[in-house]
Length: 403
Image 1: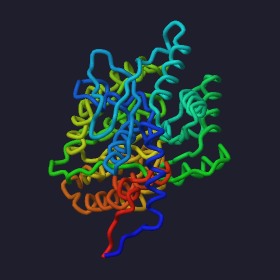
Image 2: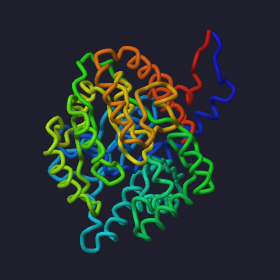
Image 3: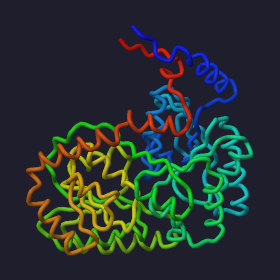
Image 4: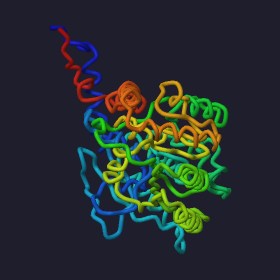
């Protein structure tokens, strides 16, 4: 038997020991809207960016990393302090819209970052909190990593017209020791827009059994914001009356047109008899819908790597995209269908998927093979450990034996 890493193991162990005596955690993820994923209570579901960090945190903990999630409190709901080896630190609810709210929000964020005592702080998705989190991390002498979630992260003005929000976000980008992106497309945009090289780490997909349910309907899940183009899905259902459609629209109370957009969606959906508008529900219940989907549909103008695609592919469910095929994986790996921005082509592709819904064996196999090769928790969490400078327990101990 040959003991690998014998000569360097003491240094690695001593380095790990010094880090553990200095800090409570190897990494803290500041993703405040993640709370709904930590409870069985019925709440508005978290988004794809939050789901990604939730899955990643658990995968890192399984590899021996000390991980902390910093999340908003959910009044009336109990959030566990420890879940699957991941510590959860709860901070006061979002209150920037209240009197003196921005000041109180900044102070709450600072306390959350400082009290975490982590070697590295990671934030995900664009927003003004990126600048504040980066600033407080630097003042606390911690490494700061920004993780992108959408193409809009590289042109934040598309989703926020407020100057101070844009300034704070750009500050966070400048302060970041590392920028982690999901796709090669995002890596190019990072270079073009920020003048920064990025670390490319694919999104993580939770393992799932191949679905054994009969495909019943096309499924759209997303926040009701303008760039998700929910009306396109409604019109798709109207144009294909022989098929069945499910739509889970999550209201966005913090976007200016959010409530009005929800009312318009409800009014339009009521006129389409083959479309069922379903209320938001916890992630475990959403996966039941995915298991019964003909295809997972995305109509957004821009995305990162839609989490709902990954969850569908893991189960053998194909994707149907209108405008954005991230890194061309749908077409390249034949994981569904891409309409290349054409609403007419979207209808034709949906009709074909509906007619072939009982014969998805081959596409299901391709979807699951793609996930296993590119998005497995083992592969993705190992790459994140490298990017964060975290050694797993096995590598830190230098005790891997090879015959």
